[in-house]
Structure formats: C-alpha cells, structure tokens
Length: 455
Ligand code: LM2
Ligand code: CA
Image (cartoon, rainbow, N blue to C red; front, side, top):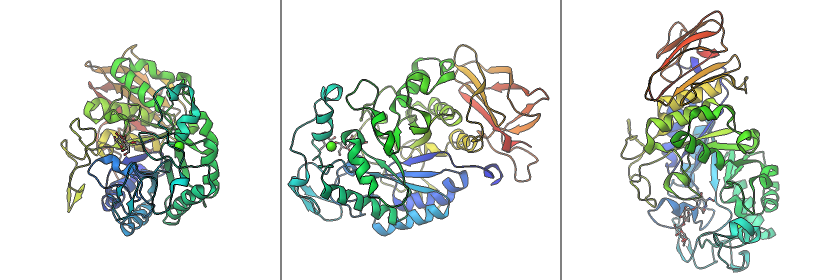
C-alpha cells in the first residue's frame, strides 16, 4: 500500500486544530506519514489563559510548553514521533500580544494587567484600541494598538525581541520545523525580520496576514520574511464554489489579484473564517459536505501555493466552543464523527488529492483545461496527472485529452495502485494512444490519476 507514495514529494500540510499532542503523534504514525503529508500545524503549545473556549490558546501567559495540548514532555515526544514518521511540526506562535486583563495560566502562572512572568508594563505599547476604520488607513494603529484588547507587545524593543526569539529557539531546539506567526499584520515586517534573524536553523515561516486588498498594511510587505497566508484564495474559492462557476477557475491565482504562488499559503477555510472570526467571508467548510471535499480536490490538484488542509471539530454554531471532550484516538477507536472531530484530512477525496499533488510536482502547470461553461471542469498537469471535477447534478460524460501516455491509471481519489502494480483498489481510467480518455464522473464527485498510479 506504500506503492502510491513511492517517489512522492510531500506538498501539503494539515492543521489539526485543538488536537492533543498524543493524538497528533498517533496520527503522524498511523495516517499522515503513510499518506505523505509534509507537516502538521499544531495549536499554540505555550501556557495560555484558563477556559473552555478554543481561543484561550491565543492569550499567552508564558512561553512554558504547557497547554491544553499537553505537557512539554508530550509535546517533545510528538515532535520526535512525527519526525520519525516523516512529518514536520509547524507551531502556531502567538507573539504579537499577551493575554487581556488578569488571571491565571494553565501551568499555574499568575498575571495581572501587563505583568507576566517575563514581561512588565514597559514591554508593551501604550494602550489604545484598534478601530475598524484603522485597517483602511492607519498602519501605525493596526500595529501599535490592541487587537480585541490583547495587550500589545512592544515588538520593536530588544528585550521583547530576545524573549520572542528565545521562545522560537526553544521550539527549534525541540525539533520544530516551522512557524505560523499569528497576527503578523499587527507587527511591523521589520520587527519580525529582527526576531527571525535571532532564530537558529532555517525554519519554514508563514505569516498570518489577512489582506483582502485595500488595507493600510499589505501582505507583500512580509514577503522578505517568508511565506504569507493568501486569504483571497479562501474567499474567492468559496465564492466560486458557492455562487459562481468552476469554469472561471482556469486561471485561478495571480491573475485573480493574488500574491505570487511561491509566497502563498492557501486553504479552503481556516479555524477563524469557518466560524465567522478573523475576517470571515463566504467560505466553504466541512458543514458543506461534498462541496467541501470538491473544493479541496481543486486546491490540491491545481498548481498554486502551499496548501493547508483544515481539520476541524463540530461546534453547532457556538463560535466560542472548544473541541470535543474525547480524544481523537481512543484505544483502537477513531473518534472522527459528524458530531465531533471532523477529520476532513482523512476523507478519501482529500487524502487522495494530497497523493495526486505529491506525484505531480514535476509539472507545475495546467494543460488541456476543459469546462462545460458551467460547473464541470477537467485539466491535466503536464504529462504527470489528470483530474476532472463535477459540481453539477448531471453526470460528467466526455472524451477528453489527459496529457498522459497510453495505459490504465488508478483513480487516487477512490483508491490506489495495488502493491504489485497489477490492479486498482478503486476506480480506473483508460487512456488511449492519443492521450484521450472517456471520462465519466457522477454528480458531486471527482476523479484524479497520475503517472505513478499507472498499472
Ligand atoms: C489571530 N490571528 O491574527 C488568530 O487566528 C485568531 O484566532 C485570534 O483571535 C487573534 N488573531 C488573536 O490571536 C481569537 C478569537 C478572538 C479571541 C482571541 C483571544 O478569534 O475572538 O478574543 O482569540 O482569545 C477573545 C474574545 C474577545 C475579547 C478577547 C480578549 O472573543 O471578545 O476581546 O478574547 O479578552 C475583549
Ligand atoms: Ca502589535
């Protein structure tokens, strides 16, 4: 069963939102490693305020590695076990601010307004609130005032910078391979550059900058520091899948006003916009069922950006609710159910599309685009892969150019090539001498084949 991932290059990471460290370690070993995922974005591992809400993780109290995710020892064990399984860990680092108000952290530290184990009031910006209108015309206030009352660190001071780089270095030391820099738009790009210059190794860095255009701070200011989240991708893809036509997507990416592909981290939805936080938008989420799987198939088969798959939990409209009170891995039982952990990354269409992306890295291009003018599309990736997506109620039935050499190919969205390479465990597709194939895709379904899934 490893056949399909031989020669594969990991291309995709997954956000295991609010998963515990033992669950993530087990997921790396039993699923993510074997399926060829590059990395996991984990929830903030440092000490945070006490509370049931998911967002307590975004209110740091100290940089001790003790959190709802688990202990420091469990964190380090996870990093090592995932690494063994070939999966990197990217930590969501909250470095723009500390907790609001006063109280206690989950590791027992106490704090009062602007007083934390390693910070005192002088380490924070003078208090002011970011107002809605500041985003359009006042970069200084966006970066020096408080985001939802969260005490804003003076990221320009050398003491604060040394604390932050010290935290990042402790993570690198533990084997962490990358960072999501939370609320990057709220920190001057230069401050981030100075902090990163004090970090050892070469961690992958992606900065969370919500830029839908027309703001005082823009995503491009952050390119020199590493990758940047492309939120336009999420909202435009959502709008197209919900209200538009997939036929529009033939030139999705830069031509739609997005940043250069090699700078972009892309996602169908994220932990904020799926619940109406952080800019929101008309995005597709797990609540949309098959539509969500098809949107991920598009993201993962189409050559733009570094894709992140979201892995969520059901929250029944309570946008503050924390994750389910059961582990994902409970003995041999997997608690991925409609009512709790969603495990979107385990859907066969989604993990299969990751396999497709991993096996088409030599052809970073779209060829043989076909659409029916509406919601049926197909394209090839050079001579390495071919995909067709049907978002209509009608059957997709067409004879199309696949760009592939003659042969029988296994659909990696329903199965894979058997270990002895003689048959397919799922559907198959026959390509003739001319590269043509009779494609048949049911309503709300997709098919994807690649050169390493050939019999
Ligand atoms: C982010 N990116 O820039 C995170 O992706 C996002 O999830 C974080 O907000 C935010 N920045 C700060 O790190 C979340 C959540 C907020 C929540 C904050 C802090 O979306 O709703 O704010 O975390 O926990 C909560 C309350 C808010 C209150 C604030 C401070 O919802 O009403 O503001 O705590 O007590 C008075
Ligand atoms: Ca700031």
